[in-house]
Length: 294
Ligand code: SF4
Image (cartoon, rainbow, N blue to C red; front, side, top):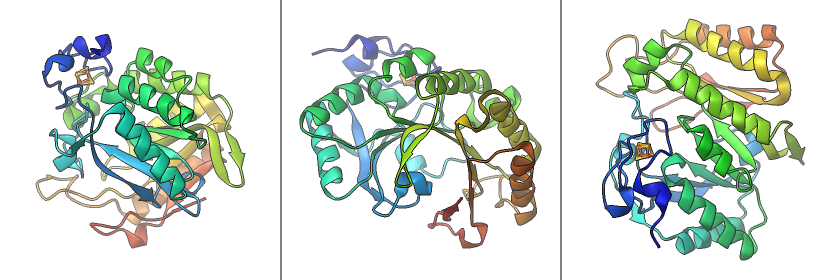
């Protein structure tokens, strides 16, 4: 059955209107055929998401943002990976649940939202009883987030940029600051208060801030903006794991310094953020995502 949502696609704020249902690629490098690159237990998310057993992470190929420093270019910029039907995706969710996943964590899901909604319904009819996490760069149109109200339990959006000029330079998305903030606002309106059980989040919003080298002032502004509006009704994840691809120019050709990261953490604490996660920078290497701590 053809889906209207994919025929003149406006799922993300690129609004490129591609006819993905008839094989056209969007800016996201995807037709309507769902493709996944990896599905596995993932232990490197925030502790309220990964828990002891891990999060059931399902990584989609393609992406609507295309950040110049992306560390997953091979999967974000092409239609690689395995094509899966809605039924197959539902089966994968149930397998991850049976392996002990605390939740199902859709990574970079925006461009497949209509199919994901159907798959989750199928999986729930088949007995899926763990939370659904929507792990997004947040370049989602509000209508897309609204469509997820009965599907998603936990929103895990980035808030990457405060300034339009930075969003334009690094992700070719000058509207990102306002688009992402609107998307996050809709997420919080759906899940206004975090609900935790046994140290795991069951419902709520966790906002991620990836500190980029040389961009401390802007990240502070981003954190401050979210805190002013949502206070401690959302969780804040301060990420220092940036790893530069080899073709980056200064300042993006280095990791963040301990001084930069500590200043961000102290700033967040001074603002009054109580629901926060930080990372242990010392452990950052090319292939190791540093642990989060509370
Ligand atoms: S999800 Fe893809 S096709 Fe749809 S508007 Fe965004 S970039 Fe374009």
